[in-house]
Structure formats: C-alpha cells, structure tokens
Length: 104
Image (tube, rainbow, N blue to C red; front, side, top):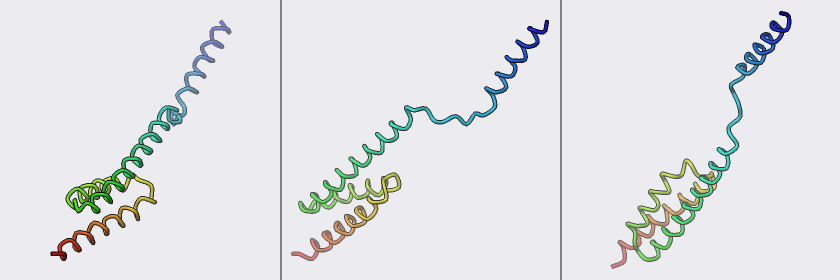
C-alpha cells in the first residue's frame, strides 16, 4: 500500500510541476520565419527605392508616387535606417514633379 501512495504522489507531483509555468519559449521555427520575412520586406523596400528613383529619371511620377506610398505603408515594419531613405525619396519625387511643371 505504501508503494501505491508513493506512486500516486510522484505522479501527482509531476503533473503539478508540469502545469506550473506556461511561459515556454517560442518554438524554434518561429524566429527564422520572422527573420526571413524581415529580409524579404527589406529586399522589397530596396527594390521599391530603386524603382522609384528610376521612375523619377523617366518622368513617370505616378509610378514613383505609388512606390513611395507602398514604402510609407511598410515604413513601420522596416529597420530605422530606411526612414531617412524613404523621406529623401519622397522629397526627390516632389521636387522632380515641381521642376517638371515649370519646364515648358
């Protein structure tokens, strides 16, 4: 009978210990997926930056505006270093549009 109590007690102790702390670390597969998404977002932002600059050179201001708008939407999810690049591109597009209006 003592063995039964000891067995039940140890099972109960393991069950209680297993229920104690539910703040387990995130699964290992989650971090690389987020890192991959971040790299993909940065690559997309780099492409949009290059495309928008090319659109300005080609006087395709509507396409440049669309690229800048897309970058503005993504700005909160991008690293901080992209903020000044996007702002500079936006100024470039606005300046180019103003200059194009002044040229007959």
